[in-house]
Image 1 (cartoon, rainbow, N blue to C red):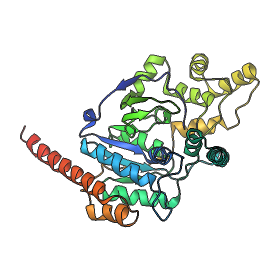
Image 2: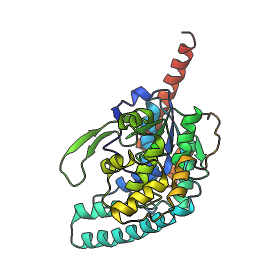
Image 3: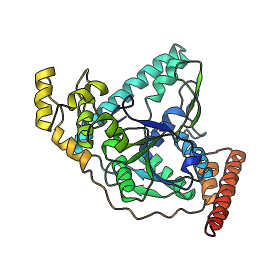
Image 4: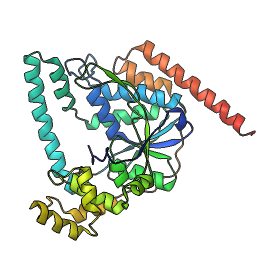
Length: 345
């Protein structure tokens, strides 16, 4: 979920076409969880094949990346590695929340409350090791590079943007900014006409860019202060302080100069203590475990491998798969021709 600073970030609406030719580092887990959550039947049951194997992640990765590739965008998927030890509590809380959501889902189905059932079901999504490996195989078959991060995928993506290997980080979470990504692109995986949850209406979701330096300047703070705001609001690594939202945190942090001062303020004002070691969490955001990544080569789509994974193994519609593969191959040829023409300019 990450830190919520949606009301404070300076956002710019862009188009997918504006990203043509650019390499983007995608937070793989963040995007795949979106697919597992949203690609479901009306009663909340995840998309599956006849053998009961969940296929929502594969469906989302194939069709959404097909659209991304058709627009000339070059994605690199960055997968999470070993989480920091202090993330253990968050992980345990999420497991507990999923179990509670499963019970609510079952009750809603028994009472035929389908809208509620689907909503509760979305909170039960689990990403298994088998799903991760199959996702990597499909991405490789589509010619999309895969990077295994030493720790958090968002941290590695941010480092790749700083290294110049990628133009921007792609994630729905704002933690990318706390990790220091100079540029964050949101909504790339959900662009288009989308139904508003629990409402009978639709909205047009468009990609947006958030420039870190621009947001920091608009708020009048440093990245260090942004991280301290995250500690107060709550992140994947610490719970935050109850009743402190983004605007309150911003107001407080402008008068705070150090972590020790922040801890004293929270204790005095709210009679609370941070449940995590905030120095450890702060250091993790400022200098997370990452590795140097060379510029990645993008391959051609291996159509036979895609067919084996999706059609042979999971019974996807051959007609839809073939049509989408044809579109990807056509776009690749057009991009190749355009690149050769550009060499003469």
